[in-house]
Length: 75
Image 1 (cartoon, helix red, strand yellow):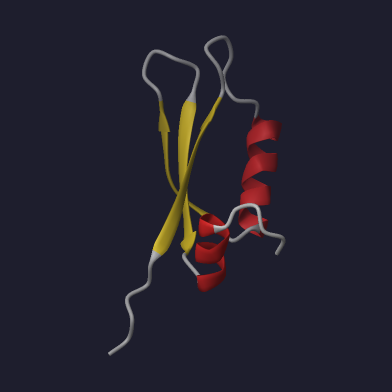
Image 2 (tube, helix red, strand yellow):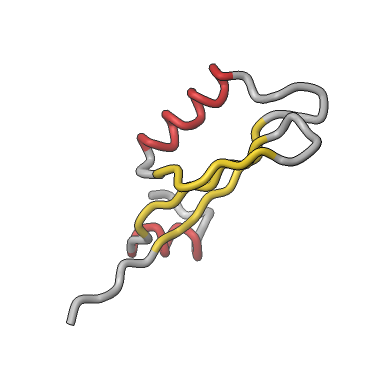
């Protein structure tokens, strides 16, 4: 039987109390995420603010697990 795919998630808020997220900043961040293997799965605006929350996921690998348990190690 195949092992079920496991995921890791990343959540980031863009924008601030004073201004919404700039398209160029958001696009740059999302392009970096894509290069790192992240896929955006949800975006929501934060009610009564200029902020948006982005949720992304990527497959959880053995290498990623090691980095999470030993964050200071060189890879």
